[in-house]
Amino acid sequence: MSDTMTNNQIPRRPFGRAVGNTNIPNDVPIIGLGCSSYANNFVEKETDVDTELSVDQDTASRLSQEHPKVQEWISTIKHAVSKGINLLDTAPWYGHGSSEVVIGLALKDLDRSKLVINTKVGRYDSDPLKQFDFSYSMTIRSVRRSLDRMGCGFIDVLQLHDPEFAPSIDLLLEETVPAMIECKK
Image 1 (spheres, helix red, strand yellow):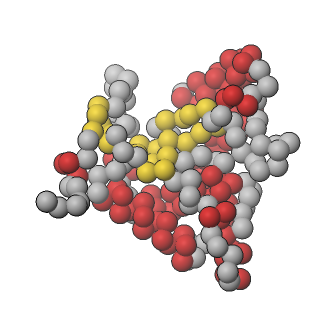
Image 2 (cartoon, rainbow, N blue to C red):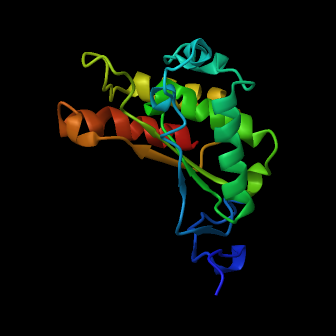
């Protein structure tokens, strides 16, 4: 018996789609690729070259595709997709945006129409005073930045990241959720 699965063996389920929406694939595997580790904070700082991976929300877009670690992450994404895993999960919080940048670099060689990309809003910075922002304006700005970092044109699934840290349920209901709905348009 072989230890490897073929694309047809990966368990799949239908992905609910709105009538007339052709952007989302018909189904997704029940296995997705979590991309949180595609971030500079998972790189060992043994050489000076790794300082190129030191990023924040403003510098993530300048992540070098030539860096060996970035090339490894891109190869991992491509390999997963080649094996039938078409759900990529990321967030601005993962590596201060570097995870989204790496997905964007990988997308240059992938068929976007066959992928489901999930990202998040609400959690952003390692500074405890800026870590969470559930405001309407930040939610909109976050989605725009995610789209820019990934260069993907649209996000399939937008998830509220760590809502338990919101100062109130009212903020989520009055600002965050309406902004997420606005992003759907």
